Amino acid sequence: MKFEETYLNDNILDALYDMHFDEMTPIQEHCIPEILDGYDVLGVAQTGTGKTAAYLLPILSQLDDGDYPKDAINCIIMSPTRELAQQIDQAMQGFGYYLDDVSSVAVYGGNDGGRYEQEMKGMRLGADVLIATPGRLLSHLKVGNLDLSRCSFFVLDEADRMLDMGFIDDIMKIVTKLPKSCQRIMFSATMPPKIRELAVALLHDPVEVKIAVSRPADKIRQSAYVCYEPQKLKIIEQLFKSGDLQRVIIFSGKKDKVKDVARQLRKMNINCGQMHSDLTQQERDEVMFKFKSGKTDVLVATDIVARGIDIDDIRIVINYDVPHDAEDYVHRIGRTARADRDGVAITFISDTDMYSFQSIEHFLGKEVDKTPLPEGIGEGPKYVKRQKHKNNTRRNGRWHSKGNGKRRNKKK
Image (cartoon, rainbow, N blue to C red; front, side, top):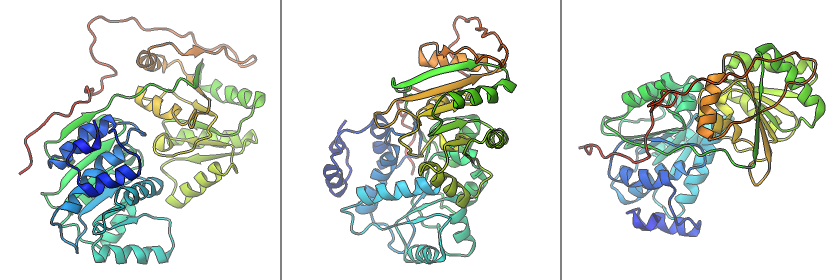
């Protein structure tokens, strides 16, 4: 479906034409008409599917067409990280190129006092679109720098990362400041039970759109080691001894394990950094700068880094533990083999993670090669396959949709 087949206004369509955007992605095709029609939307789609445009384009079109107050914040877009807020702000500048009367301001932590003053000025003048991280927005709310009582649109982007980073309580405090008439839009790459609960609390009778997770790129060479937990660090030590260890991300689902792995790697004289939710924004920025610039060779991280961070030259991704589901697996290993490069993805499968990994293999439609353990670290557990059950229509006990938004009762 082409953008011109929607009723986005001409100024938006002109900007899209200049940017050589013609065909909509599936998430855009399902979300843009529903948002234009005034429905709350719950979108589930992985990074790289065009979800930012899926909510920005219809909101900007309405702000440009509609009779919205010039002295009010008309749209709030919540981002879990400064990096994503900056990416949204850049997209806003492109899509809004011909929107002379639609203004925006980005609000996030880790800046000097001069930027804070600039943020306050923009909010008091009534920026149409406010792109913000939760902590920074709350700090402005507490000192009375902004009023959300006339806000018409609220977008929660990458809600699952908000949950991972402990921001959900902050989000709910912000939501209490919104009027009941505010149209609410929520995007998440995955849909664990707590995100489903948040959607129920936040959205009013939403249209639900889920775009199927794409399988990993063919250029990613996937393999796995079947091992006991104490053998994992020994495998890493052998891997790093035998090859170039630059541009490596090691993922773990738990921040305590990230800290422990990073500590053990430093004992091996491996130049590494760590990324998890206990770090401040300034500390995260410093870690990412050092990794992107090559000052550190290895980044040990929770799934905070699995989505939304663009680093094109990652050579190896190591899953220190098996991800919760196929979606998380795809997001993690998708950090490598970007920009037409090759990549390697290695997963450590402990004796307690075998069935979880077999669910991932089922999604992939193939078995991942199991690499023999290096000599000298002992034998690993036997890879035992579970028996197949007939008539089992559920996969991992998770919510699934065919990607077709169901029309609900339109908001009054």
